[in-house]
Figure 1: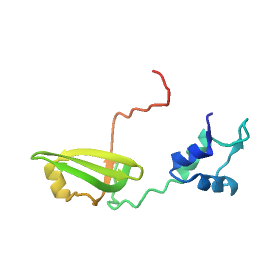
Figure 2: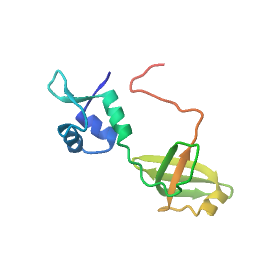
Figure 3: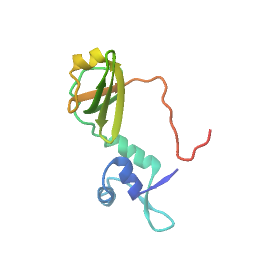
Figure 4: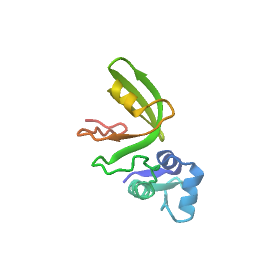
Length: 134
C-alpha cells in the first residue's frame, strides 16, 4: 500500500498542508510515521477519506440522470463557427472541454461566466499511473 506524505495528500485533496495536519491532529484522518519520521497517510485511507468527504458544488440542473460523472463549473471560453462549437469549462481544478453544435450553444445561451454542468458518460476511461509500463 502506498504511503502518501502530508504535502502530496493536500495537493490531491485540493487543500493546504495545514488543513491536512489539522485533520490528522483531530483524528479525522489517520496517519502513521515513516522511517524518516515524517507523517504519512496510507493510500487506501486517503482514498476513503476523499470519497466520504467529497462535497461537490450544488448541481443547478438537479434532475435524475444515469450519468454519475457530473462536474459543476463556469464556462470560460466559447468558440463558435457556422456548425460546431468548442466550450471550455473550469470545474474546480479541472478544465473540461466539450464539442457541440453551434445551435446547442445558442439554445443553452452558453457564454463565458455561465454556470453549467458538464455531464460525462463514457464507455472508455483510460487510467494511467506515474512511471507505469504497459
